[in-house]
Length: 100
Image (cartoon, rainbow, N blue to C red; front, top):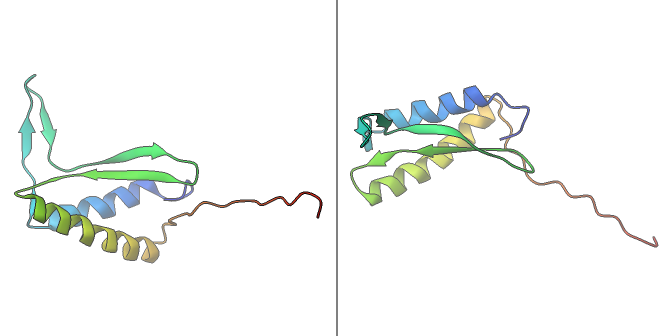
């Protein structure tokens, strides 16, 4: 997403969609140190050259459900970001022609 976009809104859109899916496990996972790891974790993963990368980690009962939710999520994000409007940037290049 673009650096100027509302990243909190973007995360909210993604989180609400994932949590609505019946395939996604919403329980918390206990860790060896006694803490709990949330089954749905959405965060800024990278500050890239062209934009901000948001990552969504979630658990399902099986791998096939995980793939389906991921595919559906991509479509939902594309449509929702257009409605809200949250820009999904693409790389811009400047070409310099020497001797022209």
